[in-house]
Image (cartoon, rainbow, N blue to C red; front, side, top):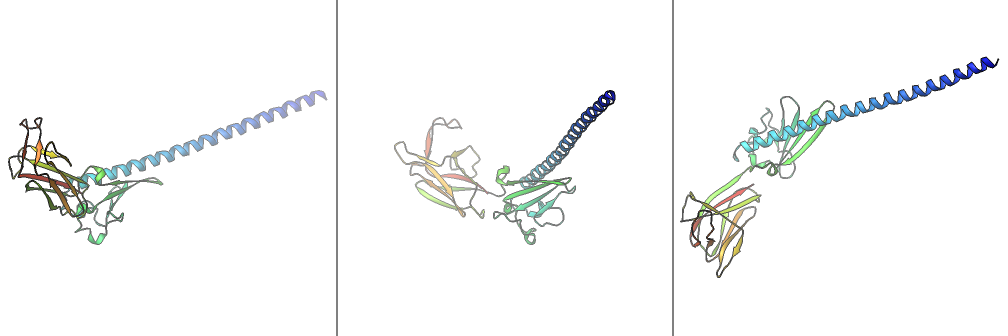
Length: 248
């Protein structure tokens, strides 16, 4: 009788141990399955992000390659010209937005200049996942529209030049051209936006708004130091040409 009781106890303990091992194995399998699912999800998300990144780079390069007077259909050339470009392989979709954050109207796509694109939103796709990247055109390192002109300016005055960019420039630079050169073919001295007055009113400053570029030149002209970049001596000239570059 005692032998039977002992055998029964061993059997019960064995069953308990097997049950515990089964539960542990089931937990390990469940954890591995969850990790596998998470890994697959992360991989899909990474692929979607890469597709979105590729999309925004491609569109930014197209904007850079097209001149400011090109139309939007040179960018959105997937056959619909609706302000949304879809890649042929379906891996990304790029939304072309104006300064108000709206997708550019398809009815004006064929006549709207590339300069109207303010931001690009690229949406990348992978199996059951999407990722999006939005980038400002200026942040892409390109100018959608450029104003570049050379004008004669005398000293001691404020000069107004209409830039025609349709909005405030994101970048303005003025260059000083020596020897009254109307082509500015020689060394262009970059004018700093400040005044320097060593015993006189020398220097220039400039600024811009939605319509014009403004330049103010001191009565003594722009002073060039003895260490100037073309190797010449110090000088200041009265009536010279200035090259104005503005970018939007």
